[in-house]
Image (tube, rainbow over all chains, first blue to last red; front, top):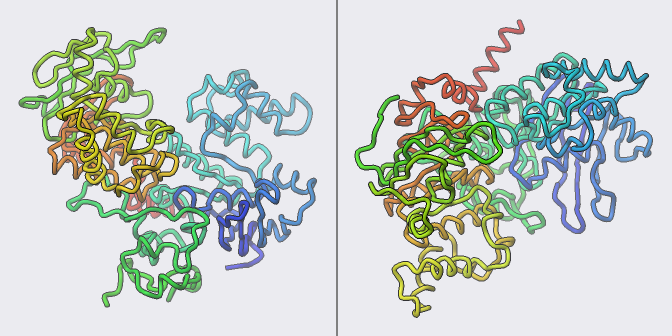
Length: 327
Length: 277
């Protein structure tokens, strides 16, 4: 899986806040033009892992980041301040969940768009308008003079996307980009992101808890639970034949439109809190297939059988064909 | 408009219009809904559709500009305090954000005791032991262990807090529960637990419920009948199995299209692969 095509290569990433380790050695890589979905529930460490890619986390002793984050082969964790600035300017761009918070309320859209650009004032303005148009916003020239609060949530998120893409980053991190938006807008925004990503050949890290969004739009998916990567692989394989009981659970807990003959079972219990001392598998207490070994030994991420190393799962008793082996 | 009326609705909102001061158009326009006793009735729409406003009217927390609220066949006097108070005892609410709905300075035990005290329902108030017994029974009914009584809301998980919210609503034996987006602030693996709790309360206590949500799949899972709202207007109503398999209104169709679904997503993928060839 690791090769020179990877624009981002995160290896054995540990993130610790104070004395609490919240990410326990995860690895993932993204190639140019590819979309990797990072899936998990709140508190599983998916957002902090993404922030660590551009070193957007607080400095020690508040937060320590260990491991390797390679961006185009260079180790970001050893970057100087000026190289970090370059990385954040045109290397990695972020789109966050709530566009109302991401935009400055007292500055016009035009001012904020031009801030990110370089060149003469007229040139910046021209490119800002082009960027807004690219993000599917109508009458971009008039929009430049408006303030964020006059726009709907969907329009605000389009502006944020236009800003993130203004410097043509090599990697776009979209952290729950549609969670704050209405369902009908959600699909539009994601389709916009995917279209622009393909057009510009960017790599995208799509962070979400919604597997339905992943199914249509990502190439590969990595599932996180309690700071661990528990399963990874191509989207079709992972969603059709999940090997980890947690992935299976995530697929099963979402109500479907066609209705249900049986009540949904759900995943019992709750996510362990960060810093809880877990000797065994972090999912063991909620897993219906738990056995003695699960309580004492944390399984490592291992390639799945017959997957050419593209799929990996961290489970002592991985499901086969999406189901548990009897006995 | 199909399945127009419910035989004897527990709650009927008739021709409700709500016009907030200073707004150009009403938040709710001429909306009528009927909630059958013992059923979970859904109210679906996007943000700004007026579904929360209509839910507040149903709960007696907002006076409509025009229109009538009928509870068990009798009109509720929304202009009079006593009428509103009586109505609020009959109807309780469960809110979207359980963290915001619980008093951070009260323990879970105090929160539940307060409701019992304030509403003085079916209890001899001099008997604290009776109140405490009722409190423990409520915790048990929503699947919380009794050692949480002395905890404060911040020490609970989101799912646990929402269970407390539900216990508090059930405390006064309301005849109708209005739940406004009760799971959208929760993690997906916890959402089903709370949805199933509503179903259990409905099945075991026969609790009538108005379930307000934006997620069609959740409404399909929970409700027998549902109303779809767009821009303050009820555009479609009907039994969920028909409504969602054969939607009549373009807005309902649009909402159904937009629901992210794994199976649908995987099919879309295949389609787009063919397109790019």
